[in-house]
Length: 477
Ligand code: AMP
Ligand code: ZN
Image (tube, helix red, strand yellow):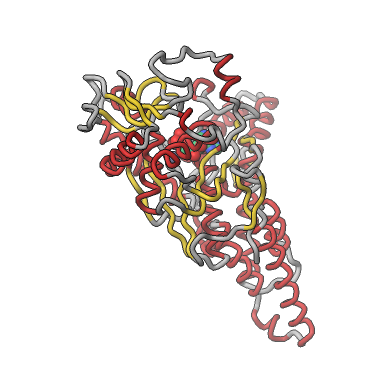
């Protein structure tokens, strides 16, 4: 069945036809490993996982590259400020390579907790300095690069068109530019492909322009070409990559070999928190570990992401995530019930009801694949998943169908029994323990109002307290 994908480049859904038969080549912009990845970042990687799995479900094989940015990503995407890695290294009083190692490992641990499939190739920027340098030299040789006292810049005026991915109007922005434009730049939107390193900079390499290091945008251009060739099928990232990072990747590839590197550019809308931006200063940047401490499993966060299409903003609230936690457990229970249905039920059935069951299964499969192949409409596909889960007639065949759907969802449903067992011996999160203690104290003080308030708060957080003659009992909802 035909897959349709939305392409930011053409601003429409397109029939997906790979460049090379059954093998799909994908490049995904990976993490900058200067701190723990947050749940917003993981919305993007969950989308990438869905993309992989949908393609695989449709019988394609994948060659998927994801980079690890461990050098060259400055504080602002527009080449302002310090290198994020160096800044973190100074703050943590560590070597930038140690920082990169630590946060890369943490990142992949979280990816595993989310059951996100690993790309075939993981490419670390610092392992590819030579490839990047070659790329930069080609850009300069073709007349698209020029040197300033700060580095080598890409001259966007040499291109037939810039920008081509985003709608930003370069001329308007020049007129109303809020930031002082570097007077050495030929055009305000020229960007650094290679950066001359200040004296105290740790990550730097020899180049024709002295001790220096590559710009962030160049890294993805060089590594995608190395592993996927000059033209490949799909390039992914978050929407923040559209106006600068991906725009500049396209510019670089056009400068080096005259082509837009990917056919389809896919971008994930942002995860917001309580209706607004996630930011360190607001204290609302959460990691998976912080969610776990509040009783929300990584896979429940994955299910939470399935409540919105990847091209719409998703608003994170703890209540919403807790509802997904409960929903995940309901889905697991439903799967187990279908799985444990007596096979005799099916055997005993007469031929027509057997056919009926098969027809229903075919119908469900059809609805599911239609949804996922329509630009990864996972929320719609989840509707079908729930219909199967809630089928009155229990059957092992429905459990098998849920297992098949789970090839796309990646919720580890086949291990449902283990998760449920684990939860029965679940450790109560610290936050919940503290609330229970506060409630006990309130009851000793006969402050019934506070006690009831805490009981309601616990309920919202997914725990039910009951007061019995023997004392207080607590159960997970
Ligand atoms: P970074 O590590 O900052 O380079 O970001 C890694 C990925 O996460 C990029 O593809 C970003 O576009 C994406 N990203 C950053 N913030 C969010 C967010 N709030 N929601 C969804 N994706 C995000
Ligand atoms: Zn990138």
